[in-house]
Length: 101
Image (cartoon, rainbow, N blue to C red; front, side, top):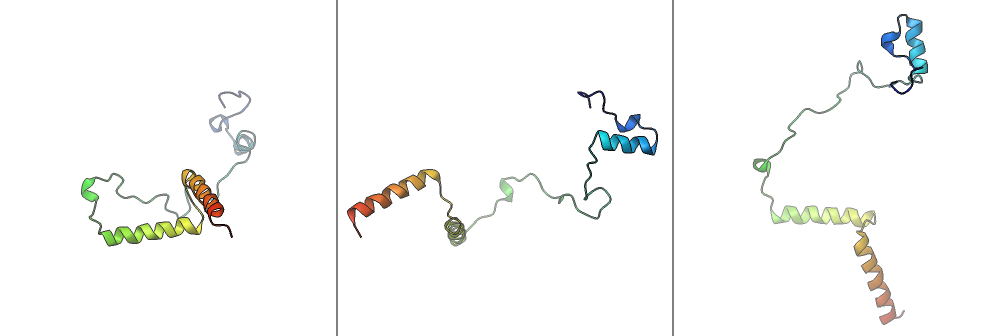
């Protein structure tokens, strides 16, 4: 509204019709379906700052299990680093030349 002086603000509107006109012209009738009066939780209030004291020891079995789960997800969705993808293609082509079908 600072750049366009033809647009009006709500504080300049005195009647309901003026406020509707401001909403129509300035805000292009923009609205939200989830607002102030709906029964919702905007965010979960909790601890936001963590420290070293919050860390817990993890066993090697837990680490191995999480690593395997993560690797399974990467394989399932064919996710790989670009640097590794080029190496894999190179190795695969070398294998094909060395061991013909």
